[in-house]
Length: 87
Image 1 (cartoon, helix red, strand yellow):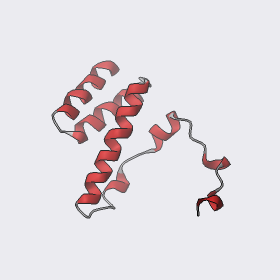
Image 2 (cartoon, helix red, strand yellow):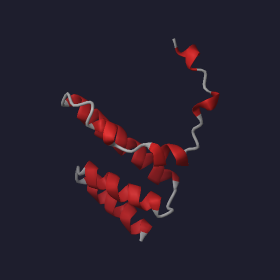
Image 3 (cartoon, one colour):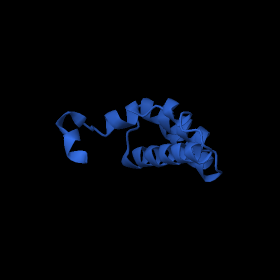
């Protein structure tokens, strides 16, 4: 079923329905389908969603989009990052 939800997300994204694509892909990820193309599609769709929110001057709407599961699967660890070196 997870692979079916993944392809439902692909169809939704191709038709321009990013919200449905995100929901289907997140559901696939939650069901254990952690394939590279799924993670890439999720990241791309989330970026597009957030960009669209910024374009309509509603930056706080994008804050409700959960990023945790994707970041967890990518094994990003910010504990070793030195934030003082950023500027």
